[in-house]
Amino acid sequence: MSIVLVGMSYRCAPVSLLERATVSAEDRPKVAADLLTEPFISEALIVSTCNRTEFYVVCEGFHPTVEHIVDTISRYSGASVSELFPHLYVRYAESAVEHMLRVAAGLDSMVVGEQQIIGQIRDAYASATEDGTIGHGLHELAHRALRTGKRVHAETDIDDEGPSMVSFAVRQALDAMGVDNLDDRHALVVGAGAMASLASTHLGRLGASMTIANRTLGRAQNVASHAREVGVSADATDLSDLVTEMSRADIVVTATGALDPLVDTPMVDQALAVRAEQRHGDSSETSADLVICDLSLPRDVVCAPRPGVTVLNIDTMQKERRAALENESDVVKHNQGLPESAQPSVVSDDAAALARSIVAEELRSYVERIRSQDVVPTVKALRRRGADILRSELDRIDSRTPDLSEKERKEVHSAMKRVVDKLMHTPTVQLKKLAGHTDMTYSDAIRDLFGLDDVEYPSAAEGRPEPSVPQPDSSLTNYAVPMALPDPADPRSMGAIMGLRHDGSDVKKGHS
Image (cartoon, one colour):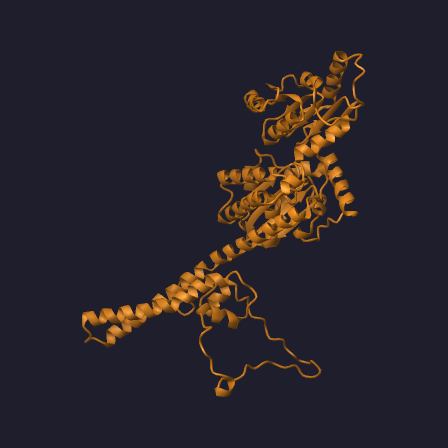
């Protein structure tokens, strides 16, 4: 069983396609269940944010799995496979694991180092756990990703080097308004989730008073209450009179999970009309009368261009981010063929390097742990093999030594059991250690497995023949390259060394 990832992100897909492929929290269980309809997929986890939609599965077949995931995305999004294909990336096995660790660390975010992705992965994991679409494989991966993200933010300055998604958007809004702060300005925050709460905190620090609007009034009141606790003037309302609330605002930030737009062109026109009537004759108006920051995907705001209105969304932030990357490195170096570790970063070199080293360390630890788990069946089979041999030999001794006293028989049994246990101890311990190493020969594996470094072998001169190595003739004609042996760190190969089947059963006994 292996992990496969199929996804798209702001790096390789336009916003118009990203929002079609976005999977809402309400739809996640259904889409994950659709992925599990094929017998070769046993687990599914969907991470869908404003910057990416990624499908992680545990599967048996790579090609049918990728085809099924792409077909599922196509059915759900309404985009054809040919439309999706140029914008998708696929990761397999360790590459898929590395990608998720980088995502959780904030290294793959539009704003490198932002912490919100950790909460988004945690929510996706909690949803999949509740819906029963993941098992041991993706549990291990999700826990490792969350651990990696926490370590990166605790042990590096990566989130001190760059802004969050919210602060990045608000900075663009301030630039559009031509101001450095929001003193004496009023903000409208639409939504009451984590992103909206973060937005209210950030806007409050910049000096704005605010109104929190949400479909559920109680949740809006909770966000407003938290804002007031830190000294921000804030009130709450529902969405029944969004036009009036927009007319009062200098800046509007939307961050909801709505599937359909909440704000359209007619609503903006109405808000501008009310606003003009309220502020008629005020010569202090800036050129940007109303700035709207849409942090949602699918978009909350669909508005035609209007004088005095600036709409900032994921698309505009994406373009701004690309420009920033280009200015920093003189050329945009992102290429889908580059390894994960080669992707450009805008945080300091030291912070990014330390973050990447943590990801690499956690990846190594994860791989070693998984490989150690993979050898458990072989370890059990090895011990069972020893127990079978012991039982057979004890029966043979009992049948041939009828004159032994009960005390003597127990002593013989105990001695033989100790011998078998001692013979089995080193191989079973070493087998787990060897699982994490792939750079050794069969000879090395056998010596390490049985702890033979202290055992002296006779030299060739003392009677041990030198190994025979096939030599090519001068023309290289009819030269057959010896068939490569399996990877000695493969638990199945270790089983072969011990005369065990791939499933851990005894070759000679034929049982498992």
